Length: 152
Image (cartoon, rainbow, N blue to C red):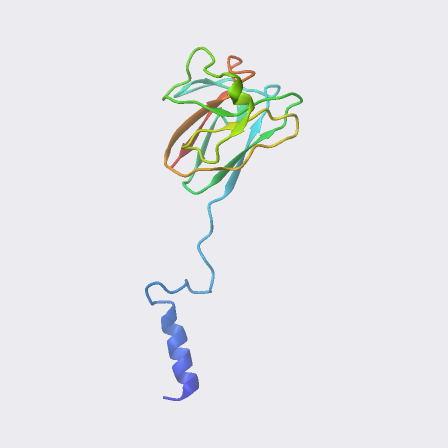
């Protein structure tokens, strides 16, 4: 077999070889990054499967495992995005002053954006495990400033 013909034949079968890169030399697209807007001023209060929600848009955000989430304060005053435990929003605010400090890097590990001033964004949070993650605002939890992220 001539060298050029052998090269073409090898190149043609490379895309069918287990473990070989996909045809076209590209790789699978990474999951998208999602930004959740935070605004009590523009809040639409709605009933969700987890209880009354508002202040975060959308009230329920759905993302795939591997996506990243960032909260952006589009309001004129401070808010937090702080994770909750449980399967529904508790009636009284469950937060203490630690919600005002930035913590966490994954949804499953719990997080707080810390106090986000107007126009500021949170740390990037990795949607590392499938599940439902509830959260709320330390300052306005009873407004009701609460939301959910569903990771599938």
